Length: 378
Image (cartoon, rainbow, N blue to C red; front, side, top):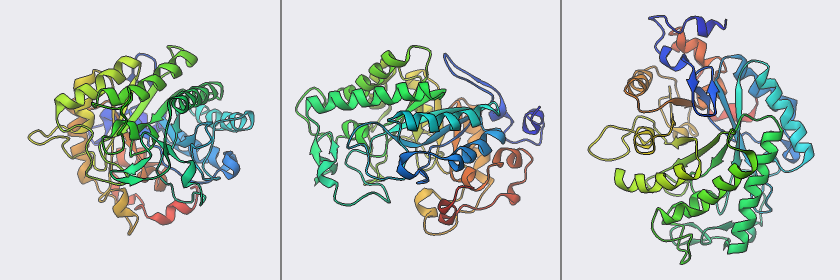
């Protein structure tokens, strides 16, 4: 028995509840702790090597229940323009990812491939001179900020096909699930957000109508991989170009957004926030994952500065100290049923053994996160 598992019922273990198994319609996990997707730029030519496999394997060996990979570009010419971000578009890539999934499975962990198309956004390290090739809902990177071009209907069909092909590759490579990256202003989210979707056709209009593109992706992925293969979807209120942006301004509006996605076949919602403890709406302490669970009836995942004193963007300037303070708040929210899973990001970059140390109350032994850690795969 893993030492962390043996401690799960101990009174001193403040995260004991997160170490209980998770069971859903088509995804069972040893515990409820997830490694959040984090872009790492260590796949030359888009192909993950042994160092990437070892990186994920260390977290599986340390007891992480589910690993969500860094964003993987789908097989579409405008999916992304960075040669060190991994792809899932060929037999060579499939063989490399089999090494990764096999390494995780050796330790009883499970792993999901995050499928990514950047749309009209940029990623650090991207190649120059590709702005004209970028596509999005309306050729906007933000409100009133033109970049690239709007997808025509034929282009939308091509992208849907590319997502579905990537889902098939992921299944063939031994992944246990896929996650569609539909947050932060990237391609799918550019259809969700009114600030980047000015389309006059069936893919624009009210918020519920703006989910059509994502719903068609979910349905086509489902058709290709079957009912038993889990599909997660990551969404966010905030955007790369506007941290204060909101898709939904009330629970009623959020429900209209979630309903079509849930009906299309999303199994789990990954609710991306910068700080997990912040209320989603005024007048109620419930977070975004809590509201999503309540309104959709689907399992949800909370994420955002778990165990840290600053959010991601604050920690790019200076080291983000670990803190045990928000762990108590995390568990209080979990205990009242706000979410089913918790995703840990930066703390698992610096501390692969985060679960064991926090379970033992050894918060002082955790290394703080700094941007220097992003320069290597520890």
